[in-house]
Image 1 (cartoon, helix red, strand yellow):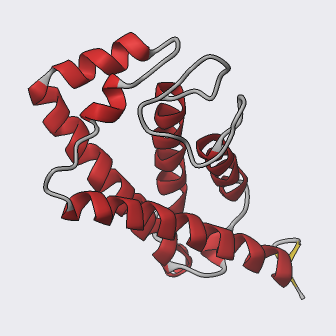
Image 2: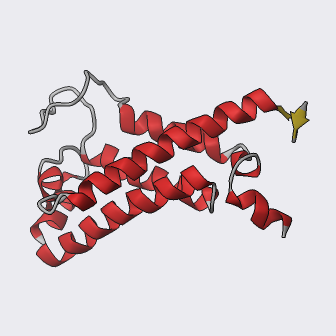
Length: 157
């Protein structure tokens, strides 16, 4: 059986991908929320590349860092929840892409860049942030929230 020109298997595979990415975002946000000492400032100070000065200046401004930290934590949580429950999926996807691109630009995987925290792997140009952002772009092209999610109920009404 086809749904909107796609097989159930195709759409369900994309729904599972959406749920996995949603879980990743949600869990990262919750871990940061529960850690009273967490701040993005160390990550931003450690930035390299073309936008390093911008990220470092953000970290140097205590008032701005409160906003950045709050937006990071709650952005991760809300994007994750939206992807999991299938509510406002398109805005959540694009919000996730923006967040991941900022992470990528802050710590680009290029030859000669070393960071305070070791990476989980060996990367050159393409890392997990860029891959997850690309996966979100793919999800934006398919109607997964019409298969499973609150968006399908909103669309009916």
